[in-house]
Length: 205
View 1 (cartoon, rainbow, N blue to C red):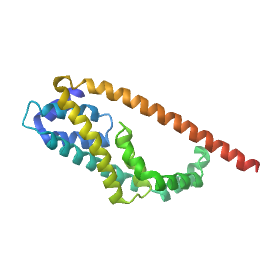
View 2 (view 1 turned 45 degrees about the vertical axis):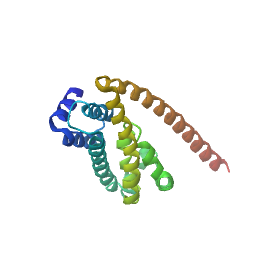
View 3 (view 1 turned 180 degrees about the horizontal axis):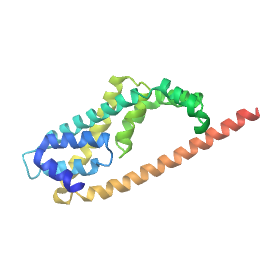
View 4 (view 1 turned 180 degrees about the vertical axis):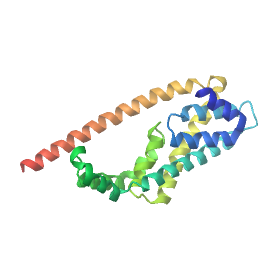
């Protein structure tokens, strides 16, 4: 897949970068850690410029994010409630669990969107719960663009500075991703333990 991505970008330039990053947001197996560094490398041996690559990548990211946000809107809380009415006894999920998660996202969702834009895989998927929670669209765009811009600038500049050694960035991003996922995993376990203990406390009281 990597060769196909780089060949497409070489052939279509800015449009290729825009399209690959838009698809990366919708189809995570297309890795931004390949598209962006290679885009940076292309600025060293073609007519492409660093600002142009960053702009094309950022617009592509936002377009892809908006598509997933729209998909999330179609799966709003009311539809989830209907699913729970039908399958909740099997999934062991209650309506109040959905409302609690929705309330949490309403409170912290903006910053979650911002920081997740800088985490591979999560940078794509986070748009769906943002849509499901009916996040203010203007705020979604602003924080999506800000987080995406930071990520794009970092990887494009690294690709441009490393030149032909740009593939090494993929290894570094892999380590970075592993650390982030480990931290998130520990946090998720802590939240689950807290949630279970709270339920048990409520039952005994």
